[in-house]
Length: 253
Ligand code: PEP
Image (cartoon, rainbow, N blue to C red; front, top):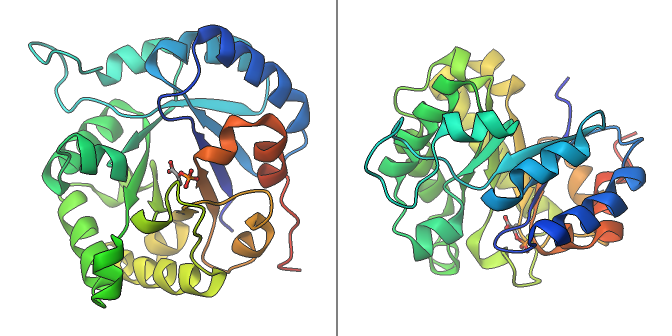
């Protein structure tokens, strides 16, 4: 049984004081969640988020992590720096990092190996653009992202990984993949992991859907057999909306 995991990706939103306000609203709303709950906050909010969520069921994550341990990498944040704040998770390879900051499968791979080697849990993002979807190459794209992104990652390391399938055309656009489309691609992705790591390891891997997942569509998406959670952008910035996603109705029966 895979325990579902729902993570908020706050992106570049919320100062420290805004972080306190949002988390103080969120904490009571999600205290009875059946799934794991994570908030991936800006680096500057990590200490405050960890302090406020201590003793609650909310874990804290960052939105990136450097591949290097330390040194001359201006603007980067190392795994050790994150770990010392109390952060447990790091998002790696988000499409906005790929699109605006030159992130590639190779840099994702280096960040991932460092993160899991240091003991962080990695939320690794893959997904196709609209042109790739319309060109019928979604499967080819996500397969390559996984094969290149996971080089050198052992089956033991895979236990520290959550895979987020995020069709780029659905992120921040209000367009969501239909539950069936999302399930089809997530199931395909599980198959890719089966060929890389074997059935048992692939079946243990938690795969999230991300892309305009919100209070209105979470129940149906979470009802899909291979979807084990969500990576939530816009809807995670409102406590009631994010709480409704986290407290999704289990339609699987
Ligand atoms: C994301 O940031 O990973 C995301 C899925 O954003 P949104 O929910 O706003 O589409």
